[in-house]
Image 1 (tube, rainbow, N blue to C red):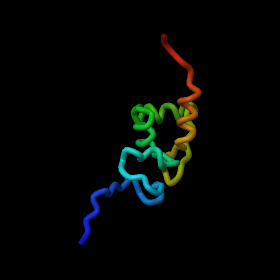
Image 2: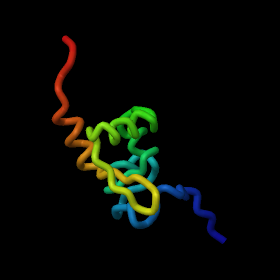
Image 3: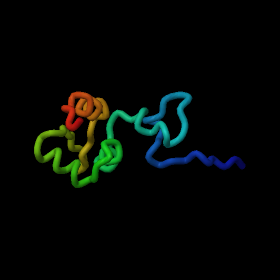
Image 4: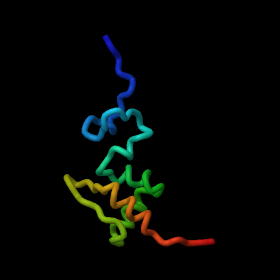
Length: 86
């Protein structure tokens, strides 16, 4: 009997690209992120993500009472943000 040790419930077969393994590449293979994953990706709190959505600074899709965010749009938001400081 073979025991699989690389099981991660948030990294399922639908988000996996051939040849990629492990949680280190989790965000690279996801198209849609949940609110919690978005908070980790942006290095903000879940409450801060909800605030960005309510202020219409971040676009979310709602499906089955959950918010989902497109990773490409999050990358675009970061890339087009203004520089602050020195």
